[in-house]
Image 1: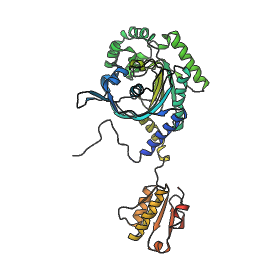
Image 2 (image 1 turned 90 degrees about the vertical axis):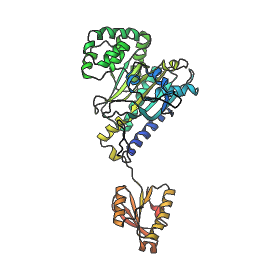
Image 3 (image 1 turned 180 degrees about the horizontal axis):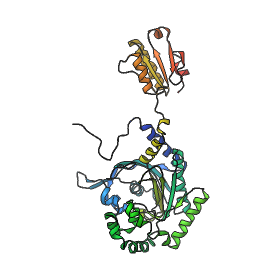
Image 4 (image 1 turned 135 degrees about the vertical axis):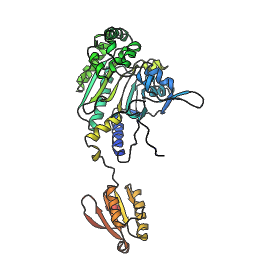
Length: 417
């Protein structure tokens, strides 16, 4: 029987992991600059954590969650997103309170049963940040600035920041009615999913990516025209802070997010290098979510970036070849006694923090040199019978082909990592 990776998942192979590590390290460094600390939550939660927070009418809850009973019949779900898990963890551990500003970030896999396509898998990875305890519009602007800074540090180009306000509980009902009134006459022309969204939550129609629905969505009423005074003032201040921070943006009055908990500020960063699924990052405010999940009223904002899409862009830009996964030293040996000496030097090199390796397959010297080349070794140290007598061997720079005689005792002191 031949096994294969499950549909919608991918193996991340050793040639690809340096790129992933570069992205993850850049995320951690950038989030740390803005005083966010890492939080790690379980991969699965009680199903209600997600149905209650994300919204029963969303595609995620209706179609995409991996839900299963455990051995005691309790319903569990692989996390389709991380915000609900972070809120649950924050409340359970008394980290989220009205008088505390909590800033955290996460990295890890998420799971949604979707149609696999470029940059979108059923197991996918996200990096995200969450801030709890402030409704300050300056924090919204800083959150967007952070996402832009992250992609700048990763080296992504041709990106666009789209922002909108989706209002709040006070002004959203009137907007929903305006949408229903508009879409009612075009209902027969919308896709089946949008016809369901019309009945359950017409705001979800604005998130549809179907081309024949988009032409009707473009003419729909805009939320910005239905905001109450407080939401208008908040959005105006967010835009003002973005201008102050010199963050370029475009107001997209059709932008909504795919989860029901969003309020006020919503934003996405989209790439011109991707297809229909072109968002590499999305987020916004969710000022009611903490209270809806059993806590006190605490405002919050966050975003998540899809790492598969970042990887796809960096590969297209040939950035992967610039991220090295090379060992520092390969010790090539001829004969058993030389191998014993080589093993001793190998151990000493690793103790000094030098990445090093040796042949384990009994290869000829020529084959060992080829293996060192495949590993991308910076240097090769060649030990044979003559070298054993002299206690000295040739150290070859694999990049320049330069060779020099180096004694066993001086190898590590002259070796350049």
